Image 1: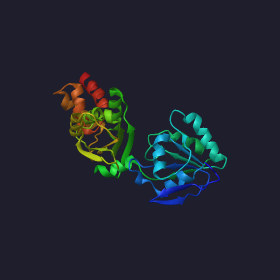
Image 2: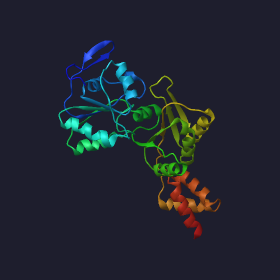
Image 3: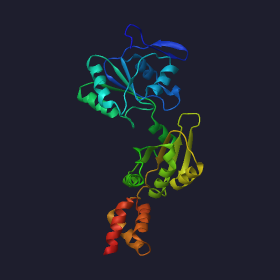
Image 4: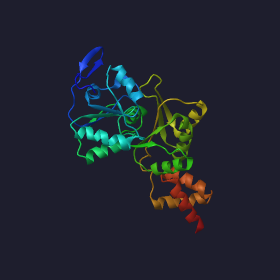
Length: 296
């Protein structure tokens, strides 16, 4: 940044001068779609910080252009974090300020900023969050699902077996589940979710805050069928899954009793699947227990 010129930004047609912030690492939330969702404080920090680090300079460049902010950007992403991170920390240790932006939303949520913040704390550098947009909470409040407790699970594994295992791990969490998913995988992921959570209500939130913002609601099998029929899907996607019904998670003794009854009518794999639906327990664990009961 040119230290001789006062940093500025333009808001609603008026040019404002941004003060240079005190030395610290600033975690700046940026819009997840609609650029008007930027906060005034975020613009002040983005324009005024000594260094601006971002995932993709092309994406952040659009934000700078919208608010007439002229400055250099420093790429910071998963491929260069090991080399770029120490230089950013050194900037603060030398008396400067660093603003960290992700491509969209709040830094550190599914991006490499976690390592930089860890390093900052270890080096005694002050870390200042600048709150704003987040796809996680935006989807949660739009979903119509319980919001008193929720769990963000990020992206599911791409491989089918690993994805199924991860979903089994999430079965018993007593809160609304929130996941990110790529559009080309959403139909297959919803189908897998429907197998693990066949009775649960869910919401698929697509293109939040953008022109084609849409929230699809229904049970997971219903949503899986709907998206399978759509063909190509585009846009950013967040999936919210309702928590298990109150009292639906059974203990081991209850599970054994349910499995014993089911095994009289069906094979272990099918019995485990049905027991998982009835109890909320992981299907993988129930299958192993079904095999043990069958062997007695």
